[in-house]
Image 1 (spheres, one colour):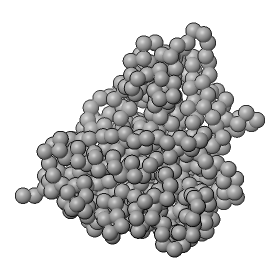
Image 2: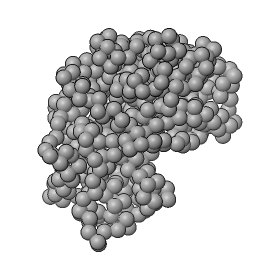
Image 3: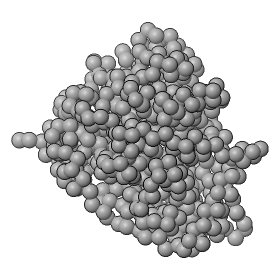
Image 4: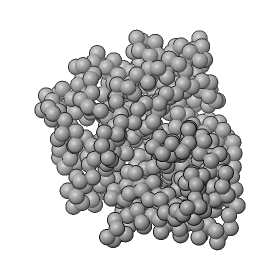
Length: 508
C-alpha cells in the first residue's frame, strides 16, 4: 500500500515540532515541545544540542502516535530549522563539544571591527553584512575559546554545522555513518558560502579561520538521496526518505507558494522574517536587506531572494512572560493589550540582540519610551505588539526601495498570526491588507511540500499552489495622519536605542 502522508520536522528557536500532512496539505497531527533557552551571560544565548535531539525523538513519536501512524505511512520527511545556530560535535561519539551558539547570541560583537575592512567583499559574495547574527563568527569563536577544539578539527575529531546538519547526521546513523550535509539555504546564512558558486568560499574560510574539513557538503534543498534515509531503529521506526531540508524562512516561502518574482511572505515567530522572491536575479541591497538563496529544488537552478530579518518580535512577548511576569502565557498578551484602546504613547524597541534589518546596529539596546505614571502593564503589552508591526514596516519600506515594487498585500504566517489584534495592528501600521492562510504553520508545510515534490507525492509547483487558501484578511482602518504620527514616534524611539554619541543609522 503506498504511503499516504508526508512528515515535517520543524526545529525552531524555542521549540521542536513534528507535523503530518495529507495529500492536500492539510494537517493530520502534530506534537510540539519547548527546549531551554540557556543565557549564561549578557548577550549569550545557547541551546543544548542533545536536548534538541531528545525533543526531536519525542515529537516524532508523539505526532505519529496521535494519528495512529508509523514511519512506514510516510512517503518522505522534510526538515526545516532555525538558521545560523551552530553545533560542533565529535563524530566518533556524537557528543557536542559545547552548547550550540544561537543566532540571537551577541558574544562575537567585538570581532566585528576586524571585519569592517572586508564588508564590501562579504556583502558581494555572501549577501550578508558583518553581524553577530550569522554563523561564521560563532564558529570562529568556538574554535578560539573551546579547549582542544581547533586541534580536534584538524584531526577530523570535530564536525560542524547548523541545526539541520546536526539532526540529519543523527537521523541517518550518527557515529554509524550519518550523513554530514547541509542545503544551500542554510549554507547561505553562514557567511561562508559564495552565493554564485553555491560552495564554501576559500577566501572566507581563511578570513574566519575555519577548517573546511569540519564543514558539511552543500547540496540542493530537495531530492531523493541527498539527505539519506532515517535509521529503522530511530524515532520513525523505519527507513524513510529525508526528501528535503531548508532553513525555516525558506521553507515558509515555499509554504506560502511564493514561487514567482515579486511574491513575498512575512513569518511571525521568535523574530520576523520577510522574504521576497527575486527568481534567478541576485539583487544587491542598498537599504539594509539581505541577499540570500530562497531555495533550490532538485536539479533546478537556485531561486534567490531579498530578506528582511528582525531579531526580536515574538521573543519580546516571551520577555513579558518570562522576565517581567506580566502575562502567564504568550496568548495572554492579546487580551491584555486589547484592554486599552492604544499604547498611550508608549514605544518599546526590543533591541535585545541589537537591531537587524534595515539598521544592522549591534550596539543598539532595548528602549521603552514615553512612560508616565498613567501607564499600566496593558500599555506595555500593546506597545510590544506595535513594536512587531513597526519593525515589519521598517523592512517593507526598505525592501520596496530595493526591489522597486509595491507590496499590495502582505502574506503572513507563523504562530503569532493567531493573534488577531496583532494582525489588525499590522494592517493599520502598514496601510495595506494582511492575509493569513488556512495553514498558518507554513514553515513545516513548506518543508513537507519540498519533500513531497522530491519523491513525486506532488507533481509540481502548480499543484502545490492550488492548495494555498486564505483564512483571514485584515484591512487597515487607521487614517493616514494617525499612521504617519505613530510611525514618526517609532522612529524617534529607534534613534534613542542607537549609539548615544551619534544616533547614526548605518544601512548596507
